[in-house]
Image 1 (tube, one colour):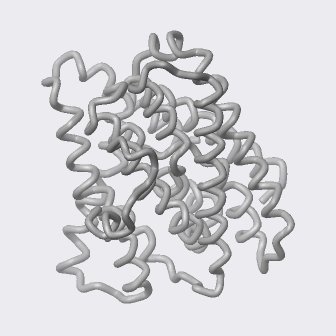
Image 2: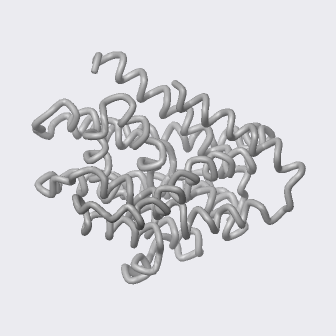
Length: 292
C-alpha cells in the first residue's frame, strides 16, 4: 500500500509543478528516462536476480500474451473508428506492452522477497519485445512493424540483453555505485512524469474510449492469466507471477513515447494512471484471496 501512496504523492507533485516549470520539462524527463534511468533500472533489477533459463516458457507467454493484447487492441480501435490519429495512436500504444519492471519488481520484492523478481523478469523479457519493439514502431507511425535491428539501438533493450548475459556476475563497486544512483532516480522521474501530464478533464473527455479500452485490456489479460493455470509449475511463486503478469498496467513508455512524438500526453497519462490503480487493486486482492 505504501507503493500506491508514494505513486499518488509524487504524481500530485508533478501535476502541481507543471504550473511553474518550462513546457519542455516533459521532453527532458523523457530523454533522461529512455537513455539513463530506465536502462539502469532494467539492468540492475534483472542482473541482481539469478535467472533460471529452464523457465523459457515464461518468456514465450510474455511475448505471445503481449501479441494477443496488442492485436485485441487493434481490433477494438478499428471497431471504435476513432477519427483522430493522435488519439488512435495513444490508445494503440496503451495495448502495447505492460509495465512489469517499474510496477511489479518493487511490489514483488515487498510481498514475496527478491527471489520472486526473477519470474516477473523472465515474463518481462518476452513483454519487452512489445514495449520496446512494437511500441517504438507504433509511436513512429509504422503500425507495429519493426526491424529487429532497431531494438539493438534502443538503450532499454540493450540494458535488458546485457542484464541476461551478465546475470549472476558481481560487478565492482566502482561501477555499480554510480549505476545505483542513476537507477534510484527512475521511479521518481516516471511518477513525476505521470503527474506532469495528468489532466482530470482528459478522463472525462475520453470517458467512453478509456472505459472500453481498459475493459478490453484487462479482459484479454485475464484470459491469459486463466490459461497460465493450465501450465504445471514448481512453486507458488511461479504460479502467482504467471497469473499476475498479464494483469499489469500499461507500460509507462506510453507516456514517454507520446511526449517524444507529440501525441496526446494527457490522454496517455490518464490511461497509465487508471491502469496502475486497477493493477494495484488486482495485486493486493489476489494476494489476500490466496493468502500468499
